[in-house]
Image (cartoon, rainbow, N blue to C red; front, side):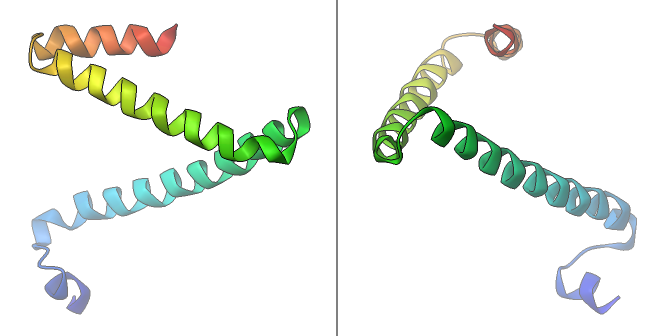
Length: 91
């Protein structure tokens, strides 16, 4: 119980917090595994000198997509934006 007290977690919140901790653990494991696999596949196809270019292109793409989502977030009803985003990821 000291850990719960230190983190200011009430007894009725303990199950939800444990679920979040487990989700974080499994999500971190997945992301680490995915990252290693993606880098391995990248290096099988491209030379290691392409890594800086890929990182820059990936970062710029992330900034562009985040800006685009932010633009539409202020102009489109959230439920419609959520459905459009879902279908965007399916394509």
